[in-house]
Amino acid sequence: MNDDATAPAAPSRDREAAAYTRYVAIGDSFTEGMADVDPGRTSGYLGWADRLAVHLARTNGQDKPAFVYANLAIRGRLLADIAGRQVDDALALAPDLVSIVGGGNDILRPRADVDALAARLEDSVAKLRASGAGVLLATPTDPREAPLIRASRGRAATYTAHIWSIARRHNACVIDLWGMNALRDWRMWAPDRIHLTPEGHRRVALNALSTLGFTAPDVGWADPLPAAAPISRAEAARLNAQWAGKYVVPWVRRRLRGQSSGDAISAKRPTLTPIEG
Image (tube, rainbow, N blue to C red; front, side, top):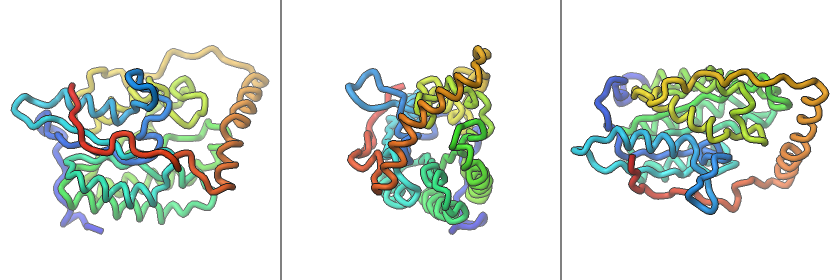
């Protein structure tokens, strides 16, 4: 791993606009953009990274190279794949910005070694920073109000602490999803309660843009939605049971069979292609 003395200097938060022109996103379903359906395609998703790419392209001055973007993220991927093959594929594209968000699928497993996950992530961040690319990380969201998934909160919190430390050591940026209170509203989440709605992805993209030092076009991205009508405990229990049967049971079955939802999926945007602001 690189230490503080040898890591390339991070871009300043007041850097001139359009400093990034080659952005590569890697990760799992969160970065693939699941549940944020792309209306311009018969199948596929947008997601926060696609939306961030558009925002970054809009900051690109006329005297700068064309802004190009690739998204190598694939649903269901564990950190070993993201920090391994995806990092290598990203580096082959010579990016000047890489977002690497992974480990969530690992943390859901009760026996996950969070310290080992963090070490693997740090190795990847050091490798990316050594190439000269800026690195954008993201913390997990806080699962304290999520049925069943709240059992992973301790692991998620430990991983979050590691991410902030890794970012400090390697001059990376971090999207603070743990502290993004707007995401505590279930209306920001798709029916599977794992993936964000289009509005959730839109807000995360603006959070990421702000994290990189740019001014978000909508400064209200962190504001919570108006209060929702309360529901009874009985209704909540019914909805939780319905959710478990439709989404949790199939996930458990795939795990028992050693399968992943992304086994037959390839990256949606495997090469750098132009993005217009």
